[in-house]
Length: 124
Image 1 (cartoon, rainbow, N blue to C red):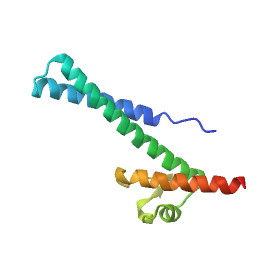
Image 2 (cartoon, rainbow, N blue to C red):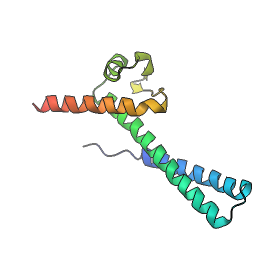
Image 3 (tube, rainbow, N blue to C red):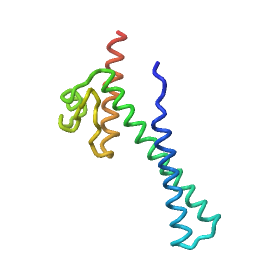
């Protein structure tokens, strides 16, 4: 059992903190909101930024974990996901996620399906 990565949580917290500060100053200075309203609006935005960043970080970690676990090449990743091999450059045995983030859920779903099938085949 592999321990969970802290990267998505730290990435989410940093994103939320930056978002909170930015939205707070925008609300207070540009929109002339009072302090409590600016904090409330900033908190909501910070929560949204945390969730988005957490799931992006989680997807990144999971994609790289599965690719490393099965030592998948760019050709194999392209075959599994239905994308081009050039979308999956591997430098120094590390997968570089250069794909736009909007494709990450598709890649993650395909790799998780591949992992389930491999684990199921190994158990029987």
